[in-house]
Image: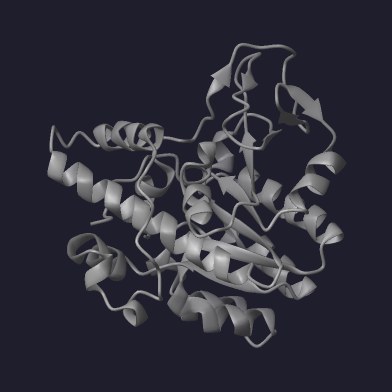
Length: 298
């Protein structure tokens, strides 16, 4: 986790897969199954699920604005809502609770969550969402685990780490072939050569990341509350990441939503998510960090 390991989270997913066009997508549209679907329909569908996953490119300002607007729309339909954050490990939970309760300033929140150490992306990208949660008194849940624990789970194996030391997180489900292939493509981008052992560690780290977030989401949705998870696109695409692990935990009512900026008259792959929202192409000034980060996952 943190800036040095963000590539493991987003792994080459800044653009969604394309399909040959029907009609040209336009900003402000939701696309589902090769067609434009009204905003009210998508939000109504999402609100009936246990878990909704909102993907993001971490450094894209417009993605976070879209997330905020989507959260507001869902909250209008569901008062019993919780927001889960990939950005912070479980040790930050008490600070998030104090923030929602109004007991912390912005500076105190960032200091107590160790934001820069834990995540590294500019906090101003996320503060509007955090303020929305506080104003509306929506609980915030830290979904992630510390890099040290993730490294330990990869090195020692889940069964060798006591349950209480791994937050009762179970071993992950094996990855699908397609997910493993995309992980391999991301791994190869780092020019680490043909190193099967290193790739296995990379894959296990990613699965540990997925199952850690899935377990926190599942726990938060136990009482029927709608839990919205904010996380990198790579964890959401094709329901291969967190949704796959949620299914292994018995949570099968998951709905995935992604933002997308088309560069041509092509439509998003309908299998990439349950629905895709069309944004204007990303402007350079809307991106805090355009470079693919080197990873420090293990």
